[in-house]
Image (tube, one colour):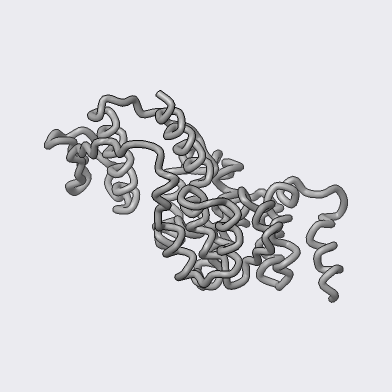
Length: 263
């Protein structure tokens, strides 16, 4: 079957364009027309979490080869809240624990996969304009928001296309001193630690985890609370807001830095 025919079948869906094709699959369908890709796309179109999980389980057997698809599947599950109505209730945190434990996908793999897909979708237009291709370059996307924070936009998109992964990731993390417009804030640490199923803040037992809670989930909660308490100790107010990925987080952070620089 010719590539154009495969793409037509991907977007056909028996009639009107599927909402998931418009929101997610369109970013991948043109470059990925193999059987595995079509199975992923078709599973997502069902909007049935059991069908999608069966697909995700197959992908997890070759996680290193299918990192993009693991990320795509998990982004859709999270954004479309497909876990609601299951035994995991309305908490994506509970569902993520299930993915880590029952589907045996390591947290590092899950985190990297989601970041890559979120960044690719968010920055798809400038990436396409620069000639960026996913094949052999996907892992560079993990460092794209940091590169945009530290360097000029035009140079970032030029280098993410031309540099090796090692070259781009190293350069992306190197701060351009000329772009730093704020004074470093005091580094105030609050002692937050997990012992067994208990979480302690400055030696006081604040939270008890249910028995069987994954160690990775405990660490996620510990890290979030440590950041929240450290912000409060610094005399500031934490403010939680939904973001689609590190790109939006970086944009918000940059706005705050610029705002403070004018005060």
